[in-house]
Image 1 (spheres, helix red, strand yellow):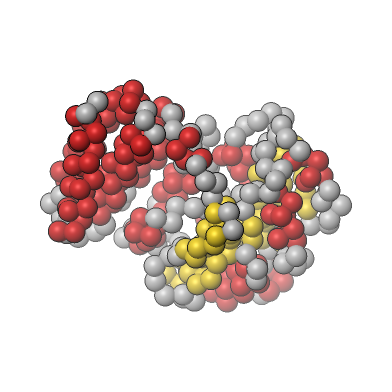
Image 2 (cartoon, one colour; image 1 turned 90 degrees about the horizontal axis):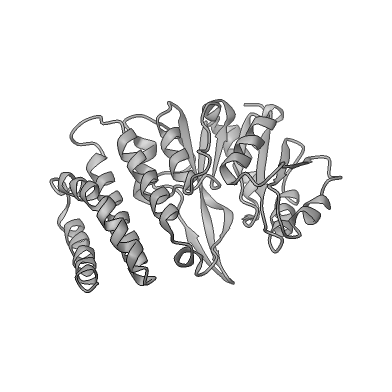
Length: 320
């Protein structure tokens, strides 16, 4: 691929991130060249976010849009995608930061390999503490072909469901939409992408500093959170394309059941007894059946892990 022919759109939805959005945009502007455009949409923020992003409106590579009302992350990402024309797309969250040197490395690898999807590492940022995170398991600087669930199996094994540490060729995701009104949209989106035929590569270097906000997960667990979270993984189970008895299906069931048990334990830790009872009553039959199927192929350490988690949960449920 010729360097001049390679174009990329960086799409940034903005909603109530006045404390972070300036750093996000500046981290990108200091790295990009004329092949990049930045599309920003203010999703009817109620803080000072709109005024902050307006400061960047005179940059030639920045386009700023205003949503007519608060539509949510998925709808805003979809709208930004529809407005762009570049060959490649990079979704970046407005409270995160593009890692130093990331843009140059991403563009260099795409130019060299002509990958349809690029996966990269990232840094988890909690306060001032930075932790390096793997975004892929495998060899860097080579193309893989997505067949026999190889792309999704890698995501499942590495728990790398994020879209912001990946860059996509527009043609590959042209007919894929973020599902509106649902949380955990990245999990659903990555499942849909995995059903496509494409070549992908791994960039063994961080491209994003992902900001974790302490305490937010436990504070925000409610019925919708539970339903959306579990739907994201049941959707993945139902859309996994079986190839043989030796494929990654049983490992997927193991990971999904482990997440189900983990969610119940989080609810219990948050002392939400009514939500715990309702969730268990509504979902336990389905997820227990997944466990029975997965158990046939589990390794000993995996069975031990699940049994420990299940026994802890059983004690909590009996004490209620």
